[in-house]
Length: 531
Ligand SMILES: Cc1cc2nc3c(=O)[nH]c(=O)nc-3n(C[C@H](O)[C@H](O)[C@H](O)COP(=O)(O)OP(=O)(O)OC[C@H]3O[C@@H](n4cnc5c(N)ncnc54)[C@H](O)[C@@H]3O)c2cc1C
Image (cartoon, rainbow, N blue to C red; front, side, top):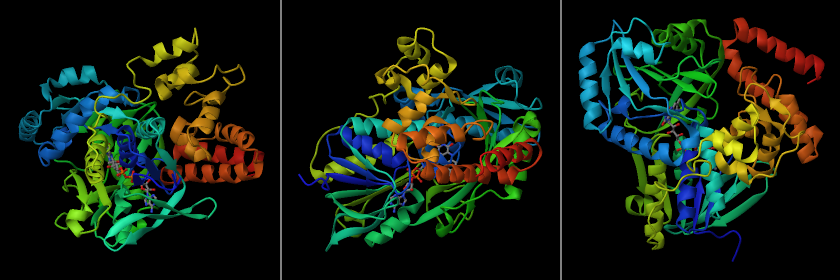
C-alpha cells in the first residue's frame, strides 16, 4: 500500500476536522488530516467556550437551537472531561423589555430546551455575582467547554483508531482529473518540502478559509467572515453562564472557564484576506467592558488578562451586514451533486457545540461515496478521558494522595493519565503555577500530543494561559522543550515568538495592573534573560 494513499483526506485541524477524522476512523476508513498550523488555531481556539443550550438561537434560528440542545446533551456524556456543567441564566435588566422573556421561554420550550423562569432573588442566590438590579431571570442548561481539550481528545482518539495527522502542512492545491478530485498537493510549513496525498474523497473542513480552499478546486463556497472580539478576566467571577435576555447583541454573554471568565462578543464583517490576523480595537474593549459590567458589576473592577478575536465561519447572506442574524445552521455540500465535481465535500457553518453532528453528516456523505454502510457511533462512544470517572478518582488510581498538579493533570487529560508511566519526583516539579502544570505533563504533551512549540504546548496544557501570561512559566517550559528537542537555539526563537504572542493579547488592554505586569515581564525576559 502506498503510504500516501488513503480512503479519505480531511483538510483543516479545527474542531470540525478533528471530529470528522475521529468519525471516519471509527467507521474503519484509512483517514488523514492535514492542517497548515496546529490544532485549534482557527475559530476553534478563538471562541467563547460556551456549550450552547441553544437558548440564544431559540427565537431567531429554531433549527440551530434544536441542534444545539441535542448535541449539548450528547457532549455532556461523551466529552465530560472537557465540560464544566455550569448551567446558564438569561437575565433581564430594568432597561430590557420583559415581554421578550415570554417569547424567549416559549421559543426555548418549542425547541426542546428546558427553560425555567425563576425569581430574581433565587438567581442572585444561584449566582451571587449577577447584577443585583435584575428584574427577571430564566435558567437554561448552558455549560462551558474547553475547545482545546475537545479538539485534542478527538485527534487522540482518531489516532487510536488508526488515523494519521499532518500538522504544519498546508494544502496548496488539488490533484484533479477531469471532473474528479484525486488528492491534494501540500507544502510543509517547517521544511518547505512538498508532497502529494491521494484519496477518492477529500473533505474541506477549513472553516472560514473553506472558501479559498474550494476556489482551489474550482468550486464556489461563499463565506461571511464575521469577526468577534472577546476579553478574558483574571478571575472566575461567575460560576454560571450569564446571558442577557434580549435579541442577540454585543457583549451579552459571560462564560466561566477553568480559572478565568470570558466576556463577548461582537460581530463585524471583515475581508476574507484579513481573517488570519484579527486584533481587538480600543472601541471593542470599551464596549465589552461597559456592556459586560451590566451583567455583573464586579467586572469593571477585575483585572483583564487579555483580549483576543476570532472569525466565525458563517455561510454568506448578503441581507445581513453584521452577520448577527445569519443562521448558525450546518452546511454540508456534496460538490458532486451541487457542482458536478466528484470527490469533494465541504462541511462548514455550525458551531463548536454542533461539531460532532457536522462530523457525522460529512462522514455519512463520505461513506455513501465509498459504498460503506457502517453507522456513526460517536454519539455514544466517550472520548478518551471521559469514561465516566471523576478526575479525582482517576488521580487516586495512580497517586495515593494526589497533589493539586496531579489532580489538575487528571482533570485535563482524564483517564488517559492512567496509561502514562509513573512520574519521578523531578517530573512532578511545577512548570506553570497559575495552571498547575508539572514537568511531567509538559514532557507528556511533547512526547504524545504532537507538540513542537510553546504555543502548541499552551493549547494542550494551558501553560501560559494563567494570570502571569507566561511570565514565570514560559522560560521553564522552553527549557524542557529545548532539552527534549536538543536544540537550544531554536527554542530561544520559539520563546521570543511565544512572548510576542502573549503581548499581542495584553496590548489592547494595556493599563493598570496588566501594564504593570507586562512591564515586569519585559524586565524578566529582556533584561534578565537577554531576549
Ligand atoms: C468570536 C467567536 C466566538 C464563538 N463562540 C462560540 C461559542 O461560545 N460556542 C460555540 O459553540 N461556538 C462558538 N463559535 C463558533 C465556533 O468557534 C466555530 O463554529 C468552530 O470553531 C468552527 O470550527 P471549524 O473546524 O469549522 O473551523 P476552524 O476552527 O477555523 O478550523 C479551520 C482550520 O483549517 C485550517 N486551514 C485553512 N486553510 C488551510 C489549508 N490551505 N491547508 C490546511 N489547513 C488549512 C486552519 O488553519 C484552521 O485550523 C465562536 C466563534 C467565534 C469566532
